[in-house]
Image 1: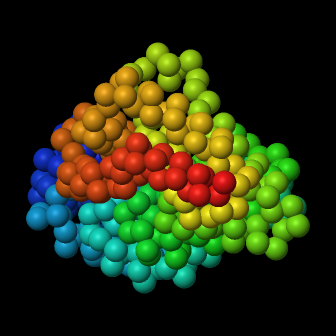
Image 2: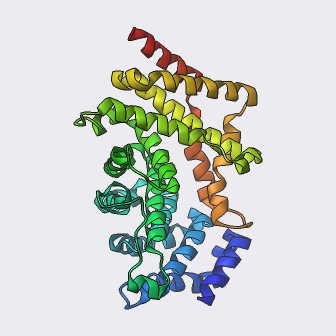
Image 3: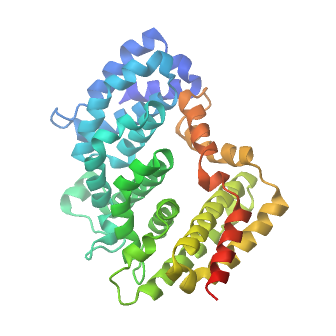
Length: 362
């Protein structure tokens, strides 16, 4: 739709100065309302995706002092879209940025909806009939140009990314919503072939859950006769995933910082699991310590500080918009990151505590 494309371009170039312009607002919010009204026949198939993209750019470029009431007025529409399960790769991102700006009260009424939605979107991983998202196209999909396998994988990745972000923003609320889906995903990883993007996204969210629930591996495989072997497999695969670095990353200093953030979060979560779970310590403790010690050497040589990590991680908001000035979401995201234990907790202390836990078992 031409109008949404024009507004998207203006906001991406000019930021909140465009969003807050009174003339633009007379067009912007009626257009958002029109594009996202899924009660109208065929509206979801024709305009919803464009509307959600415009909504997302608007959120990232908004300041609460001027745009707060208008953003809150749109929340009932977002709830209807989420309940319908339409365009989850965008609707979950819209919800995430609403939560960044407006707080947990945006998410709390939707807890049960989101819990079911995440389970459903990751079904391509944990279902017994699933094959890692590689589903076939039916005739209706072909006529619309839809690759169902790609769409399913995309939506599962979006669900796991949302889970990671939600647990980072609101740990207790996020864990209660996201842990059922993540646990099901981790439970089927041993011995199952899953597409690489799904594996990466699964471990991103799992690392966050492990930090908040360090005994979760014991719980996930509690009734499995091969509990030790599967826990060892999950840990070794997790370490392998976060230490696998592409040539593109090696050539980019910024990308290397982002990779270090992921690796540090993994090491902190795994070290805590060693401290809290004797089983994890016994079957995987040594490999966890070796991984953490290697990472400590990298940290000491590179001298990466917290501000550099926050700057690298905050690039998410810049990817949503172009060159225009960002709204309140940028500062709010930086605040969330600066209080994130997976960025701020000392890796040296975590390694020391894990070493003590291992020593106590001798």
